[in-house]
Image (tube, rainbow, N blue to C red; front, side, top):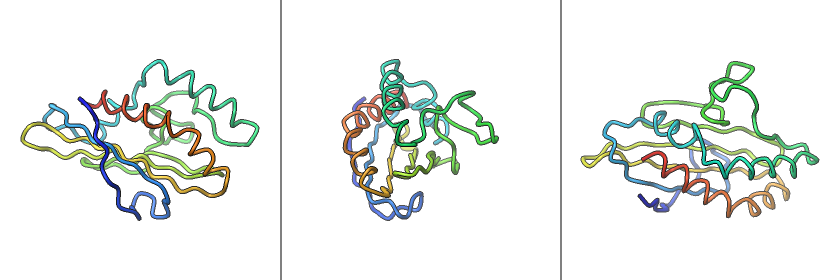
Length: 159
């Protein structure tokens, strides 16, 4: 199943100050799939090629004081925050789950939405970013080719 890119209207309630966004959608043949289930399928276990990219990213950004990958149990943080994969859950309803966190260079949210249709469930994965400074803009530009590949891989697992 191939993801298609769809337009995002800003501002978005999940990150009202976002100045960049993208959104992709796939059609799943799973009836009744809710947003949390779709997020677990997408991010619960990413393809093996993502781990080396994240390790490289963490090594490169460490001198700049940016948050790295999150260690420990992927479902719970030390402070008791539930996670899906490495992403903290910010809000959760049957149709929409919002994941993400804030950092010094940018804030980001991943919004996973589901829409039950006669032929299955549409799953949308939206990324919202609020860049704080030049470093945030440069960082987003550098990771963009990887972001799109990771989103496509994640969405293919959610269907």
